[in-house]
Image (cartoon, rainbow over all chains, first blue to last red; front, top):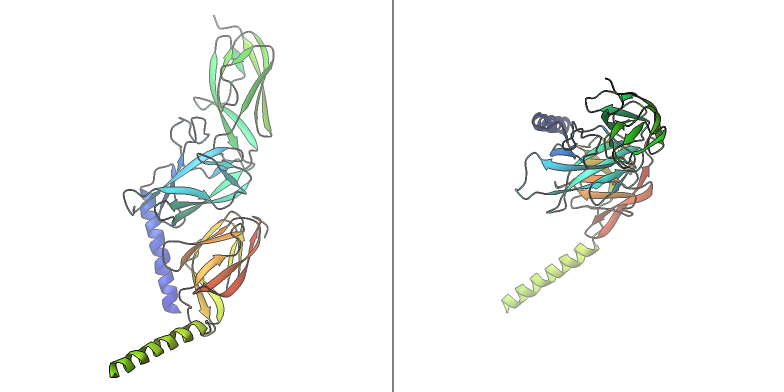
Length: 231
Length: 131
């Protein structure tokens, strides 16, 4: 009994040590697998993925992805069993995520168990649980990470990117479809077609416009006032 | 002649062994014991004679079947009766398995020994956050 307990403790310490040493070398966009055999990497689904401000690399491995968003992850072993080791990421259930040709789509809120299956022998090598959460809040941030300016001057353009949060204020990852619409005066013009997670907003003429940005059930309204260009 | 008798005796003994082997009662399953269990974020209850998992969650565990003499029954094969509810797969290390809550519902974890079913344990896969 005591020997068994001791062995289990040694095992636990070994697993922890392995995870810890592997985790030291992890990139910010990686998260160690729960079995300690390697790390999952968050891959930008496309240039509009909320986790990827530069459109290329995720800032970090996200805690949560948004319901309705597309996302993609990959897996790398700490100690590769061979140079040709390749892994397929599969979902435990189709309740929370749906398999796409490339990556997954968040379906409903909950913890989605994902596992890395080695393609050469179909063995499950590692697992991870990724939280999927409903979007509760939407925010527009400019390229220099400031809130959208609602006072503009004719000729100005501001580039904005959407951000989404769950009800607890946690930032959500994934590529969602955002729909943009301008009503009222034609004071501002939208430079890209919907759906788009990024938008260039140009002050076209003096007046006031209502800007609506919608994702799923969440809609934000902004009143943008455009004045004459500064002399 | 003596050689033929010897061969005949050996054949008889072998046949006897085969027949005895196939009619031998399998060990009486008593319970499952688990170790090296991973910790999913949602409920996973691995009991000696039942399993409860939350849907969408994955658990890794070393699983040993024990008989009524508290001895490990070796070479047990584990199968899920309904993989739409729960799946079980080897984890690449002998005796270690991955249990996956695939869909809400109930099923059975079947234990086979040389293609003979020796036990079936109830499995429940429940909604996340339901307990």
